Image 1 (tube, one colour):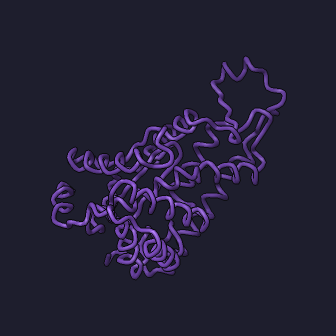
Image 2 (cartoon, helix red, strand yellow):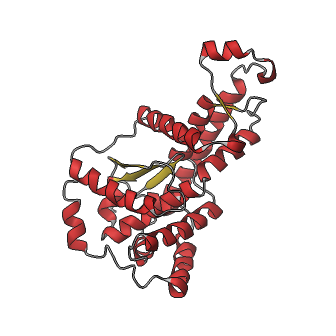
Image 3 (cartoon, one colour):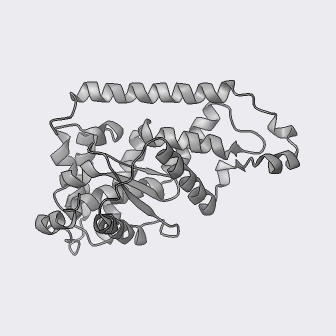
Length: 281
């Protein structure tokens, strides 16, 4: 972690980038000529390939499609997927699918990808897409800790936090018309949310709680999520600049464990096995 900036400077720069990104995105939307959506000819829409989405009743299939398009856009923005070792990628997918299968939103497909980036971070987008940096995999001490982070990100998908933020941003910037929101606009917003804009405190707390329960349902030692946050708290790495309030969140999770931990959930605590599985990094 010796490559980490001073916590306040790192956090400040993160918020600055986020603000700049949102201003740029808003400016592009505001200054691009927009035809009156109420008067658009349906044949013009078909000819131009324009798709509009109603966020108020977004279906699972539409959200998955939005996630797929956001994934492609993220890769065009420079997100590099780790492909050097198929066994490590398969291992991460196994962990993710084990958790997704017993989550409160297991009816959609999930995609788990490793990002070739040594910073300690993870994020999720709409439609079941979860991204884990190589730096985070190396920072975890065992499978239960890594599974805790994956479960937390699944919690964001279960809570539909990305879709909710999209709704807030589109309403705040007045880009919702009679036909809904352009899918291209939503993809652009999805990229900004993934790369620059942190989740709200409420969303983080909910993702913690949903992830904690999900972790136990999958048989993992629920202390994994707690110990991961405790170990990283002192360094305030990238993960906590995009996932705020580490101290308060640790305290809340400790209270949850004291009140309701699953006695049968003990899997994933062997560090040697974990290190052998991610040796390909």
